[in-house]
Image (cartoon, rainbow over all chains, first blue to last red):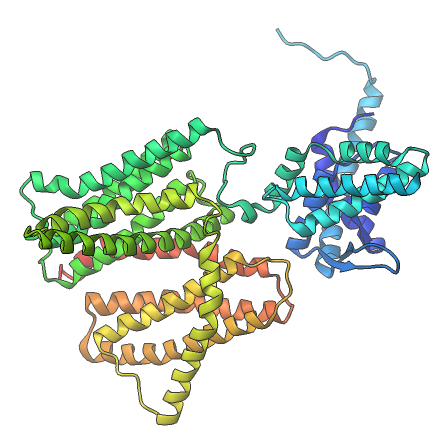
Length: 122
Length: 453
């Protein structure tokens, strides 16, 4: 299944903040996590993830630190900040409103019948 | 076998790194981050049974096309390539560069012509100095605006607004009947170029004046432009000296040519040439203004603190003559410039350091001095009443004071880690319209307000 670009972009911030709210992480792990959580349906590119992480950092929603784990390479870890948590709460509210409305609409359309032909005017 | 594969992989990754580093929008630390990502993916893929070189190919392919990746980075980090506002793929075509050069030459010629055009109508550079002082800004900045309007391909609506603003400037400069030695004429000669410079900014941003990042780009441009202009002026000074010297050696007086042609036309053309240099010759003296800021911030901070200590020890009040007012306005402008250009070049993500403390010290000491000056000015105004000069100086002082006071507060919060650096940048870009409003007020409202004194 292909998920439209706009939808991917809109859900990007809450997904990243949500993942970081559980624990701090780094780019590749976040990407894998998103792929796992969506059952492979959400495939992000690096061109989406890293600029987004940098934007969240600039806005103060996440904090980044370079650390070298023992015997490993230098790696940039991202952790959520208080401002980020606030933003996440706000985003959750908005998404809840959207999904609620969608559910409502889906239910209504099901009762009419999912393959009702559109009424053409003229 | 494995070691051979490993060295192969290392070589490939090293090559990939150099390719990545050529992108202006992607910095070294970003490449580090992406390399870490690439290696992780290569590791995962080899675990599933792929050979390292195959894994590398797939990992690179997954990362997406390099110019797409760098475009995404550029969108987020527009400050890194503020000079290439349009995200064109790599080097602009040769034809494009030649067209740009031609546009620059045409606009510079227009500026030079504009300076000499009034002589056709009997206005002489030597005798009608007041006329030239009022209109100098128009002569040089109208062609500059035209240059940017062409370069940014501004829409018709923006073009009309730009033209109307210049008409307004021309009216403001010439419609009022001001005496040649009135205060208002000096004020409008000083403020009109500032007002028009911000109109240039409108063309520079291609009409998108609401965008904070565009405003910051224009602030950066202004700093670089100023440096180029000063460099050209220095070169021009040498040229003038040589011309006078050599011609007088062969018994010809070149002074009229220099004062009537070379200096005025050269200065007007230099305004355009400097702008073109900033636009075209990126990277030659890459971001000079922030470098100078780094050098002069500590020196100015020390000087201002010394002045404060001297005032405190001697308890001498500041003697506010008219020239002094301008001097202190200038001091605030310099401090504001230092703050602006260090903000414009600062990596917003970096934690606060010693340099930030120095900036705060600079701003706070400038504010303290300014308070003393404001007290003195108020004293003079209550004693002698308002004049155009004093009102303008007071207004400027207040505008700069408000900016610097809030800057100091924001800076303090940033250093304490309570606020993000981006807020400071926002404040400065949000404040730009205040300067525009004030400059236009002085040009358009002050003369009738003070009965053309």
